[in-house]
Length: 255
Image (cartoon, rainbow, N blue to C red; front, side, top):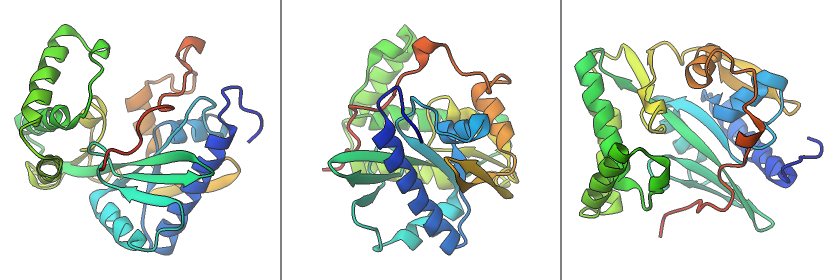
């Protein structure tokens, strides 16, 4: 991988080891996944991890995630934990030599074809996300969003973490599915959750190179990159924005 100017050589090495493990589980179990987020963007740009990225993301449909969770079961290798207690995002956590990295798993669920129903489902998930946050950095939000987050966060204190996770699971999987013509990443970020695709979007896969190895990617991955990063996704951001996003953050919220 070479020398990393951001001091992330060891982090990147462990991230690739974690990704190798996911790939092994999925190929052995005939489970489909796709590189996602910065990992997919780096693969497309130059077949390398983005130098300042300090985590990895993959995505799956709900059915594939259920198969993945079953396959990994109680056979986790030493140092790995599959947690479903980090906010609303399943996370494969890998610890080695006192260093911890993680791979977040984003899940595609069905969403109704009715526009008003889409708005209601997404708004409900946004509300639940506000309820589930253990802490909020209000400095990142507008005045209106600060008020909304404060309300949802305060309301969320009336429920246990398990109750909130169960609410989120039900809304994601079963609420306003419509005729199963469309999907979206029901556990994505505030903005990513809004991106809706036709139901066939995650139906075909190819292999793509990353750090000298081959991993799975949704065959229509460029549609995702354009939606997430814009038409000029091949152009890196300004130097001032090239910063690790997760170092120092708590990686696990379960007690």
